Image (cartoon, rainbow, N blue to C red; front, side):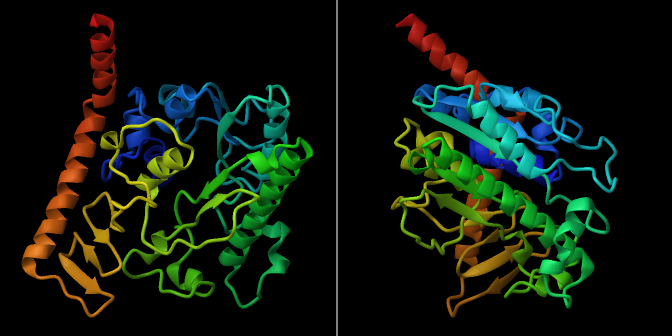
Length: 338
């Protein structure tokens, strides 16, 4: 459930529940503090897109409850795809998705601000055989495994799709006034870590290194800058909200704006493991691996583990009890009574 859970975390800055398909199990929850609602309150038109249907995740329900004005799936967009998982040409083309997305934009008044949440699919497994996996295989080194080359071939389709999006925004005269946030929902776990290591400068088989995925904030006028501290899905919402000057209460999120003075480069995993620039702590084995000469004493490890445990417990309870639905009703009740 990596896709649905990490997508949800990016939308609401809460941790998913360990070993639980949280996005689906708690799909009826509402979150007035979600990324959609923040943009709605700021006067943006919000919508969301995905080039598959609700076989994996009930996005038609989830995104609506998150505040998306309208959700467009592969059926609504009239995209070509297969309902049979694992078929040679199962997935829709992200290139076609972006073309359809631009058509939807053309129905909107582009003089008004808009926010779209787009989930691509062309690079999804399987990698043993697939249309997009075979399409650009010849572009990549033959010494790589077949599965890795097929994955990279699929990524080329995603890259083409981003090009279509950028060109389309430029043709409509709004590229310079548009910010694009890109992030990966999870690493390609269907590929053996030894194969991934062929193309990466680090060992994906240790210290949760495989979980490193891209996070990019792009605007045509921005000068390229690299942010090297550890971060996670939790921090996407407060970071974007702050950059856009949206009105939000930071106490309602377990993530932090990465550019704030209070930012702490600590990544927490749903099982209680954690990682920062000093060490990786494995909650399952109670082992810690250090990256610097600094070594935590027992009290410092206990303090970090306590922080991690409390954050996960608070997040889990908020989701299980639909807390933010209750909180919104309490706020509305107070406003009405005044």
